Length: 60
Image (cartoon, rainbow, N blue to C red; front, side, top):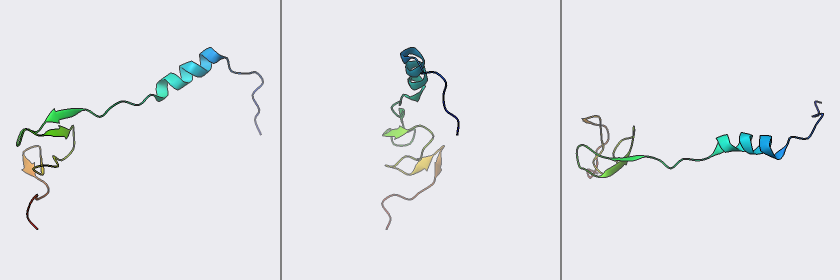
């Protein structure tokens, strides 16, 4: 089994962990109903994506 020969310094550890940060999801206004929706996702309030109805909302 491989074992490191030297201890990783705090600087190297922090540089590695700096790449693991989380980003908040981006929201835009839906072109159909103007509700907030996540980019590249179907609008959950009207069911449209790129001008096409993907899911029907309200009809059960």
